[in-house]
Length: 339
Image: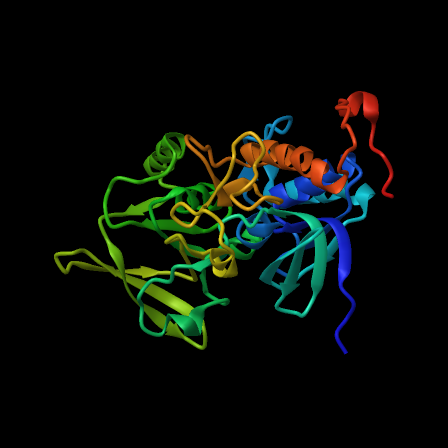
């Protein structure tokens, strides 16, 4: 027997930091929320990819670990009692007279007066290096994300990649691992200038070894445990790096998934929105965070937070038609209890 549809004011697709803040913003305007996410935990990439990675550009927090930020955002949303539907994907979207009907891969049906898409980069997974047999080491010695930095304490760690993730974890693990070796195909790195400078400083101190210009060739080991990572230059020069772990940071493979078939105006796998309201080309559907785009868009969490506030205020007119919204600051309004 099919379960009865859920009825709510706003359906939020994505339980990352921006989606969680949208729950708060909607709650402040007395709008109830149901939240759907493909992961089995809230937090999006912050929880799945780098929970212990420090973030430095959140207002009021000189430094905050990604998971700590998610915890704070969850606490902020909690008074409004959102309903979470985790470990499932929104697969269908249908226009109704009073809003939209969403269906998920788990058979959940949600009727909502407005929809906010906060799906981050969409469905994502790591780009794996083309090494034969690498699957045998995944999860034990080969990793594409770091969820607990202490698991590498005292280990010999090879980090492959030249972007921000590779640089950030090389810098962090320099204080934890026995050895850190950074493999990159060229001497120039793509990360933030401050991170590049810090990486070279650690290399000069002998705390990090820069293995350039090399690329991954193959792995040695058995029973899922690495013994060494072999690397090679384009000219065929090889090196054997004794290692306990390989962290491969070659970016994410991202796809919009079913969202691409909903008739939204898109721009290179991003959803075009009205910058003033965060509304998409479909009335009543809003997009916020990394998945949303407009001219000169800055992909920052704090930008997504602002878009969440805009989307909530625009959605209010759909949820409470005919009611005048008298804007008040939270310092004077306080946090209303969930209705």
